[in-house]
Length: 420
Image (cartoon, rainbow, N blue to C red; front, side):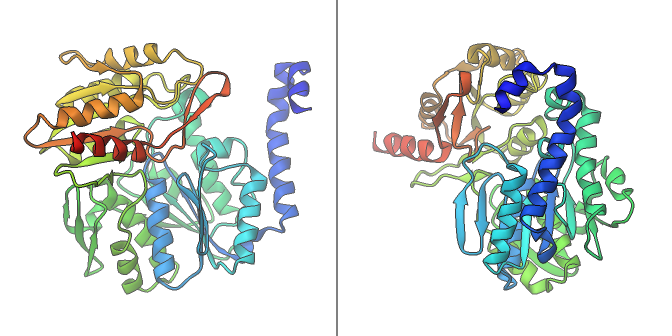
């Protein structure tokens, strides 16, 4: 029925009606499930990078503090002790899904919920009528530009989430933001919220490499096995909001220390090899550079493509330039071409490389195997497989999708390489 309406209705009418349609769906979903966010402590997490990692760290802090916790995000849907992998290729599913998730969390005895909130979701009012106690702003850099029309519209969608926090029925509403990000002032300026900044300056004596992070925070030693300087921001974000919500400092430190890994986020694949093999979701220039900077002491073999045919074409040569700058060997491969020609996508990435000539291997499984075979020839290698992380499918033309998992493919290939 909806597809028929779209076909027979003029586009200008659809554009005018779309906001009303999405708003009404959000309101009906909240009414049907009786505003479950009002019965939980709810923390939203938004930003360009670090949302999933921050949500996972915060969820574990709440768990270690003795709370029963729900987490909804790119990686998984967790309610109490029940966890389901997110197979929807969508961080923040539709309005009814999110409200039902929160109602199920209430029924399961949860007291706290952590929800990743995206700009794409905000376009469809998916965050509306979720009564948050706090919102974490991680950072902002260009993404989804074609979808939103401009960086300014993308930023406005993120700020709409902050205004949803301001409308929350909760007595105190905390806006926890990364003060090191140039856009943080806009989030702190949203009325009727309590601004709580965090900054890397608060991580005294910060030490960060690919395996560990350590620093002093509020005169307390904080350690983590997540690795990567960028994860220090995610740790500070989670710790800051937890402290504002009354979680004792020892539980915060314990929650950070016991977050041993985050699926698809700087995740090490270990099958007995002597060098790092990393799977990471990095799909923006900033996040890709952060991963590459973590492994500058290695002879890196980098496998990358560009997530999402038909979107953010501007970043393709930028990603290629970063790979040329930081990687010893570059292999360009297929990710999610959708209805675009995957060879053309990779050609556009390669256009950003002026000195090196990348290998182009469309078959992603073959590309990963090639990278691992190249690693055998290096003295101090690291294989960095970026762009997919825990993404469950490779999306092709006309809505086709191939089941996929970079981690299991890398494990399988590693076993073959070690056995050869």
